[in-house]
Image 1 (tube, one colour):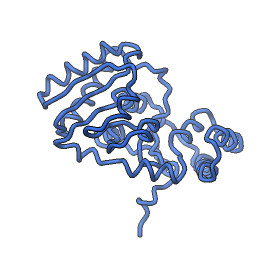
Image 2 (cartoon, one colour):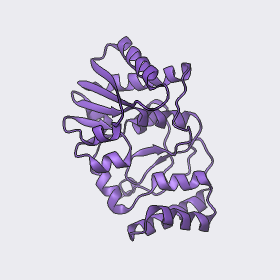
Image 3 (tube, helix red, strand yellow):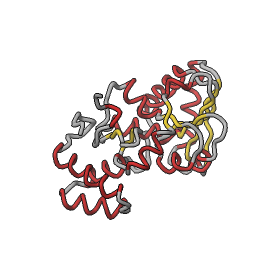
Image 4 (cartoon, helix red, strand yellow):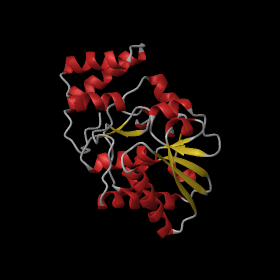
Length: 237
């Protein structure tokens, strides 16, 4: 297990062993919630540590299936991409707020929540918007559509901030749309790529997927999220 910090100190031995046991149960068909409880109780894991397992460890079959859909963000050049806006923004914000961020077994980076579905409404969101737009601009996609969940607090104001921030860079086609069913629209995308780390969307879609949140954390903030189980592709021959 990779024990580098990502906002919280992680008890390496207990959490690493718990992750291995949890993966073993998932590979044998155990449902995730009973398996989390069994393993969490055995190793006396905190709520945060249980969240890290739930968001960061999946069966070998599920991990391989999602990994096969993952594409490098650097390959977005000249392509159309639809972005799960709040999924990416919350990943960045939770990292900045000091909450754990994990490199999951399916190779996507995920936060474990904790912001009660609210992003800041002040200058801190402007900072998020700037990083978000600057990164997308650098990737040179031909057209970018950002979807925001309309029911979330201040979504309309935050859409305007994103659109205004993008207009400063003059990087090409960009639009922000408010949707009541972001997950469904992303899952049905059949023209271009999508950017999300949402497991439900990845499992339902048929198009290539970019982990934009993970890309921003690694490139912009020079951080390596916590890896609970080693990625076989990282092992030496």
